[in-house]
Length: 459
Image (cartoon, rainbow, N blue to C red; front, side, top):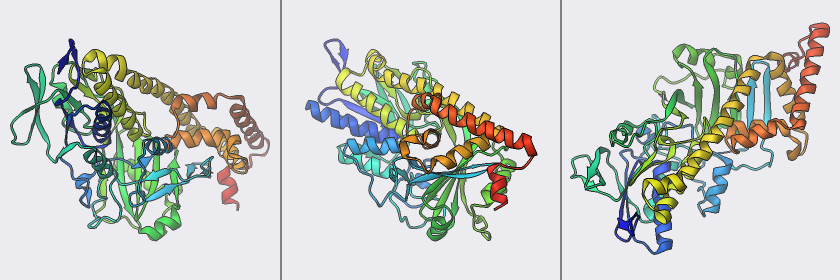
């Protein structure tokens, strides 16, 4: 509606949210909450074709399902506690696997605040869900807050008298005062927003590989424990991979370039990977797998009068904590819409500030992962990293400089800018330099294999 020449949400205003994943549910939840604080009654309709409640992949959101420490904390501050029925594994550590060996890294604060969840109803073979769906949990929060849920795919989006219109399935088009895009980068609905005529262009993406490995809860506990296993292996086209324990399953996420059957096979047969699996384990024929896209670079023009895009259809976090980025962008957009207005100027002056912060932080993220790639390809340096991390496990949490940097890099629990700054501190660089010099001298002096791998092989 228009008030004093400004586009604003008033009593009776309507909002359409296309996409009921985390970004859409967060937006609906906060929009209703903020409007309630103002005493404004607005209608929020969420359109989502997937079924997050039913067992099996019908509600799959093609995601690794790690809820970062920072997001767990932020949700707790909002009064949102993740129920035990949803958290399949509390991650209290991770194991770094490199060609030169492996090292266990405990959380610096000795707390289990990283959660492993299924985004939908579980993998293909699940016929009865033992665990609640994370996306269903968030959607239920939005519905309980007063949002309306339509389990339908949006067929068309257009304009009518300057207001956005949404047509779902065979229904008649409905006019709205505000249209919110929260579809994610894997949704075909992005083309509907690109056709709206305000120069929106979808984000850059990279292709990933995700599969669910079924072991049963006892074998998962025995072979993987409560640790996320991160692999930095010198395999062509593979950037990194992770094994994430969840209930009866372990989720494998691979990120790289042109991930194909040959690369997947090379990874699965790598000694560092096979060492984690039970000796007689064989992947079932009917296993759940997909090759989804992952956010890599920001979209162009993510807002207009009466339109805003949130989550990774607009801007997200590089490689890590996409759900946390959905929370931040959705809350910022909802706050802007309710308190500042729904014009392009309002979104530019308020919502877009959060987008810029994420974009700038991603630049530091690219620098951080460039260093990770260099370490991965340099044997002496990677061995030095493992040596330092091994020694740090006996130190108090605040003195584990390298462990904390690696922990935050691979769990998404801190901004990349903070990670980069800490990796430039003298204590961090000094420890790495001493370990590197020691490894170089030992190798040069007698040719003995003093790498972590060599020590492990020698007992």
